[in-house]
Length: 351
Image (cartoon, rainbow, N blue to C red; front, top):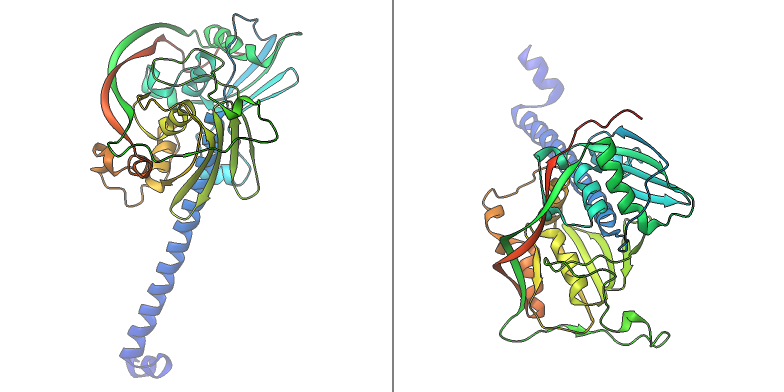
C-alpha cells in the first residue's frame, strides 16, 4: 500500500514539497484576504472621518422636530459598509433629517457641538447605534438641527445632563526650537477677498479645547478619497498602502487642531502663535486609523499592534509626522468644558 502511494504521488521528498507548496499557497491566500480587509477598513475609516468632519453652524434656540422615528441600528461592520448594506452619518434633504447608524455619543456631539473627550457618561454611549428619520417644521433651517436633536434626546431617551469645567490632561501644539517649517499657502488669484485666503473667524466662539464649530462641506469619489472644505481650510483624505495621507491646503491652526484632534486621546490647545494659512501633507499610519475606528465602536482586526504602544504617544504617526514641520505636541493640563451625562436610556420611547 505504501509503495503504491509513493508510485502515485512521488517519493517522500516530493510529498514534503507538495505539503510546503500547499501551505505556501494557503499563507498567500490568507495574506491577500488580510490585506483586502485592511484596505476595506481604511476606506471605512476615511468615511468615518467624513462623518466626523460634518459640522453645524451655531444656532440660538430652535424648534423641535414635527415627528421622528427611531430604531436601533446594527453594530458597525466593515463588510456591511463596504457592500453598501450599511451607511453612516447624517443627511438633510429638504425638511427630512436622515441619521444612519450613529451612536449616542455621535448624537451628543452633533446636538451639543462638543468633542468626544468632552463627554462624560456610561461606556455604552459609543456602542449603541441608532437610525433616525425626522421631519423639520416649516421654516426651520439646518442650523437649527442641533437644538432639535437636543429636544429629541431629552424627549425620547430621557436625557438629562449638566456642564462643568475640569483641569484635564491635554496636548499643546507648539513650535520646536528650530522654528516652524510650514509652507504658506499662495493667495487665490480668483478670489482675493475670500476668507479662505486669510485667518478665518470661526462661526462660533472657540472652545477651551481649541476646537471650533464651522460649516463644512464634503465629497467623496469612487476611490475612497474624501475631500472636505471649511472656512478653516481644505483637506483631502487619501487611502494609501499602510494608512492614509492627509493633504491639507489653506489650513489655519484652528483647522490643524480639528484634524489632529481626531487621532489623539486628549484635547489639543494651540500655543504656536501662527496666524497664517499653510499647505502640508501628513501620513497617518494604519494603527492610528484603527484606533480611531475602535474609538467609535467599530470591531476591526488587531493586526500586529504592540500592547505598549497605547502608553507611548510618541510612537504615533501623528506625533512624529508633525515634527517635520517644526511642530510638536507637548503634554499639558488645561481647563476643559465637559458635558456630564446624568441619565440617558438605552432604549428610546416608542415611535
